[in-house]
Image (cartoon, rainbow, N blue to C red):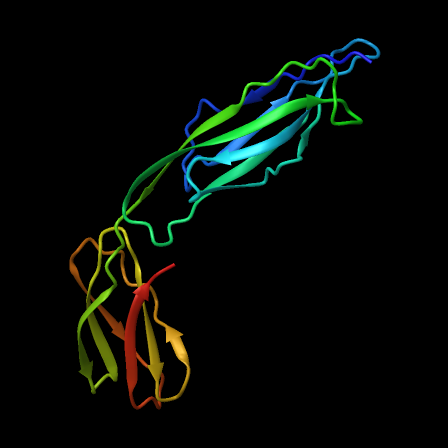
Amino acid sequence: QIYEPAILTSNTATPLSPGGDNQIQITNAPVAGHPGALRATVLVEEILLSDARFSLTGVDVGDRLDPAGALGGTVDFDEAGVSPGTYSGTLTLRTKMVGNTSNFLNGAPAIPDLVWDLSHTVGAPLPPPEILGFAYDPATNTTTITYQSIAGETFKFSAAGSLGGYVDLPDPPVGTGAIMDYTHNPPAGATRYFYKARRGG
C-alpha cells in the first residue's frame, strides 16, 4: 500500500498563555479524493516541556491523528510556591507517520517537531479584605461594617450568629480603593454576630 504523507496544520505560531489563549490545535489533511487513496496517520511519540511548572492535558504519548482528524490540548501553569514574575517555556511534540493499522510505515519522511512558545505571568498576591470598624445601632438592630476595598475586586462578608450557622452577606460594591460602608440587619432573635471578610467569587 502506498500512503500519501501526513500534512499537519497547527497553531504553533501563536504563543500560548495559561489563563488566556492556552489551547494547542493540530489537524491532519484528509485522504486525497481518488479511489483507493491512503494518507498516513500521525503518532505522538514524545511530549517535552522545558519548564515542569507548565503542563499539558488532552494530548498524550501514543495518541493517533488520523487523516482529517484533529488533536487539541490545554496548557496550564502551577503557581504553587512561585514568586511573582513572568515565566517562559516551550512545549514540543515529537511525532512520526504510521500506517492506519500499524506503527510502522516504510520510507515515511520525518515530521519536524511541533514547538509552541509558552508564557505565564504570576501577579503579586492580593492583600486580604480589610475591615476597618463596626457601628451597631440598637434602635434598628443593624450593624454598619466599614471596610477598605481594592480596585476591581468584590468582597463578601460572612457572619456567624448566636442562632447558629453562617450566612453570606450580599456583595458590597466593587471597590476602587475607597472606604465603603455596608449595613447588616441580622435575623430577629440574634443576640450577637461575628463578622469576617473574604474575597468574593
